[in-house]
Image (cartoon, rainbow, N blue to C red):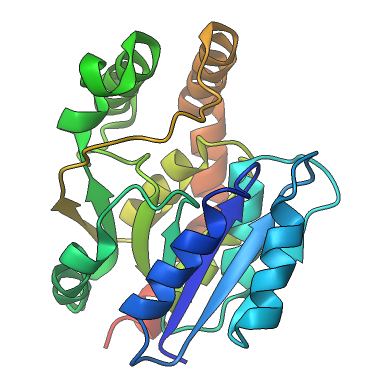
Length: 253
């Protein structure tokens, strides 16, 4: 199988079907699967997901038995994937993927590249497009990542990334962050294993109004960030050290 697409979902009943149809059209000439991982929630998202499974033979649905977080949902979908490439996208598909997909494929063809991150830091930090809280959160996460984690990637949080499948499944087996900061761990692991991360810079004209970013969540996320950067990061990378040689040798052509 060429591609696995993983879509983590919470309250996405209004947009999920449109996103799945878009992906079906983009990948229609390929052998692919779509894995929808649905967090337990009071909306009708799981009903929509199951209807899509009945409509499309290549759609699979994973239903979480609780509210664990985006990182948990993405990890579960990635570990269930079978594709040579794993595409992880948000349910609102914030990017015009049809426009950029061929370029993303070109970037990941490099043997040294483990993943391609779609990035749009300029738009994500624009107050006019995202509001004060969300735009400031994006800027300060970028600043803190550079300062404390030395991650040279412009944007780790935009919900559109393409991974080489074998690398993704190995990397995600170590991820233990269940919330949205899981992408910091994924980035650290990729770089620690010696893989390059390419970026595809895009423009985003609109953003979903649904967001968990508020003052309370920002405070909790800031504490988690510093806990990870000061303690958790060292523990995570040390835990993954024993697999480093095997991963590089089996994943590079």
